[in-house]
Image (cartoon, rainbow, N blue to C red; front, top):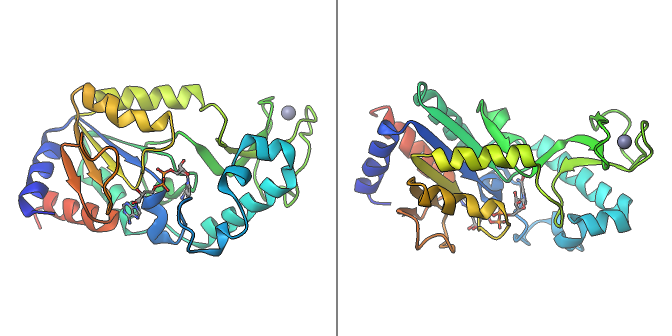
Length: 249
Ligand code: NAD
Ligand code: ZN
């Protein structure tokens, strides 16, 4: 990234009233949580993500999906937010008085763990369980949940409170994300390939509504052409440099 770009981006942040950071699986890659398209780790060996992370897969074979998510949860609990998450949390402190919203597609809970206050998890979270029929029953994994079990209130299957492929997003969370996106003066997209709808349309809407669009990704994506700034670097490096610039270091 050229230094001039960093200063231009910092200048927009200083003037902004509403700042959005929109994140995807690539942000957690440095924590050791593989993205769905990363075949390098054992997590995806012998599984098809569309099978173990889809609603069809869950209804067909609940224990298989459950066990795979349990394994993913164990990995997430074992690892921690990386320098990218921490710098995004620091950005919120630096921008106190402005409004910084994190909209994440990740289900790992790392933004909140890093210290961000306003986080919209549009794909839910792996840390909570709920009744598949939304009868109101919610639970934690530690409440005797190493196996799939039936909802004590209505008998439907209990499952992690995350959005599986083939499912609708939570209306309330997604409309809040749409509103924040449309109000954004600057919209950062980090670690996402824009392949999962409807979340992938948020940056486009933000741009139409007038936001400056900044993409941070080591590789080009379908958003690169419309972005105002395309930063070819990892998340940690960029957000740390931006914070340092804003702090005048
Ligand atoms: P994706 O796997 O489709 O794309 C990841 C993107 O991140 C790629 O474009 C890659 O070039 C980029 N990237 C890799 N390392 C990076 C780094 N250090 N800094 C910045 N960018 C980096 O991810 P997606 O678009 O989020 O879509 C996958 C879906 O699966 C989403 O719903 C996602 O949240 C979910 N998922 C979540 C997790 C998690 O919670 N950690 C893990 C796997 C998948
Ligand atoms: Zn129920």
